[in-house]
Length: 604
Image 1: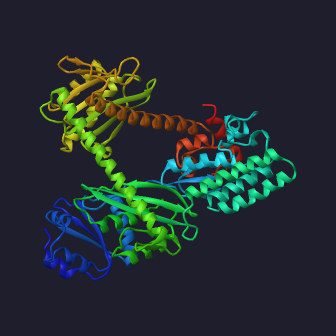
Image 2 (image 1 turned 180 degrees about the horizontal axis):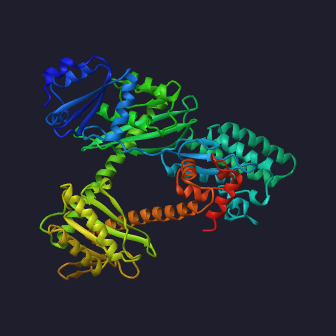
Image 3 (image 1 turned 45 degrees about the horizontal axis):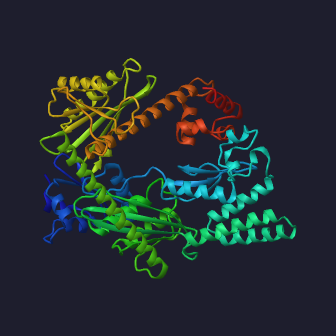
């Protein structure tokens, strides 16, 4: 075990990263230091420690250090290691794979507006990043309403012989059938680009000139339409516009209550609020405010997928490592980044808004947690269990006529869904459509794993199905010598409408709970989540199988070109949606090969 005195005497004064390890070598905590010796010595000094540090040091049996060339490299390495290992005593934020953008394509002569997630290697103009998909879709809806840009795929666009519903409801100008000239459509695109860039005044000026010209030419209908468009733009500007001088800003609010922390991020680009999002970190006991904010900044902005770091980040408090963080962010963003906390005027109001939103998010989270606990207690009383269940698991099976069968396991505790414990099982070697055999396989694989890893079993197991599925679960648990789990079969009836569920028990009892029962609501929530999780996995497997097999059957498409297609489009579904022109842009794909791919995928 670690000899602290000897270890500290040999530690370097250089910058680097340290990893606290337990007796099994598992990583407890990862930290960075400008001076490794000074930082590590502070852990073992006589000074009083916070709750988290005191609890962690009881388990530390060894320390690994990695010396870096400079301080900035230490911060980046720490961020990457935390994301990779997710140590128990670090503050961890969800690692989003990518952030959504609005894309205006470079399709000529009629570009389209689209939702886009991923790297920005493809052609077109990107606007964002937006904090969530809802904000992107709301913005696209607004652009369609104001500027009537098309949102259809190139394949759909090229095949039209008459305008679609978007034209009928006034959200498209019908370029697919030539109802607008390319020149006029490009004007609409230019106005949309200015609007998304925060240049509303310029859009309004140009539209005003166009309106006056139409009026002079006695085209009063066109002038009235433009007038209405200008009115809508002014209303939106009054609602969204915040500050042109500080146009690209992220505002970070923080609230911590009853052990729950929320970081609320307001995204402002081009002087407009694009939206906000709450982040709930997984954190050890009583993390400091500074630790939460520092962890958020490093994990959010230094992600490989985060492609837009604003010029200013407003924080609720000043950080000790503020200059260090700003320096690393500047290197990543290739422009100056300021971390501000002592703000005044409008920027202070933004911070107050973000903080208030964080407080509201925490309150909602606490209410949801309290409601879940209440449902668990009602579940115990209704089913007359000896104690309120700690963990409830639910299994469901999904397939399409026996194709791509997937089993799901979802886990709920008194905090709500424990998504890190969810599992999917790709079912093999069973007769297609045999739900009973599929259920047996999923249950066997899951509980064998729990047993071999020494993990605790759930208190209650819900099986989506009636007596046959319940008997299958009973048989599996008996074979594995597991007798501590309370089994319930949930049969949803022919209509599968909520409120008509039948609960089957292994002793033969059958009950129907009233539709307003909190216990039934909990069962419905858990079963619906299991069904959602199963069907999502099934569709992924089905689409992957269908598209992959289609690609493999195309002459000239080998492993390398399949890999290039997946890398370029980011997934199977995107390949399926791609137009002929988009396929031809993939490295190594000729026009003739793109035609063969397109034909094969659209005749499946």
